[in-house]
Length: 149
Image (cartoon, rainbow, N blue to C red; front, side, top):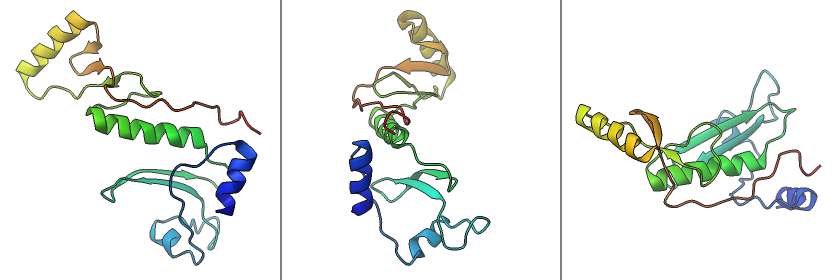
């Protein structure tokens, strides 16, 4: 709790996801967070996003001398949720509520249909790269990682 409160006091950012205390390091060892090349007791800076089904969806590993970027972690979490809800993928540099990428067609007939839709709607570059607006999206406040020092 003290760590979360300190983050809030110094940055104004509330961490909206669970943080696990691991005083004996057993969880850190199970998840490979101890980098023996760096230290046998200190963890490298890790972020795990685990879904409701217990599936690890994202792992970010930062060196000990590089801090995490909370706005980026929130962006990735939002991207995972939006992609799942809308059955789309998010493109590189995606920001919340921008269009997502439609899954590619699975048949030649689907390919032809997709090409016609792109021509009509101007929503893609090729049959395998077409976009669709997010039906459900949640804007998050975007802040630069260096905006509050």
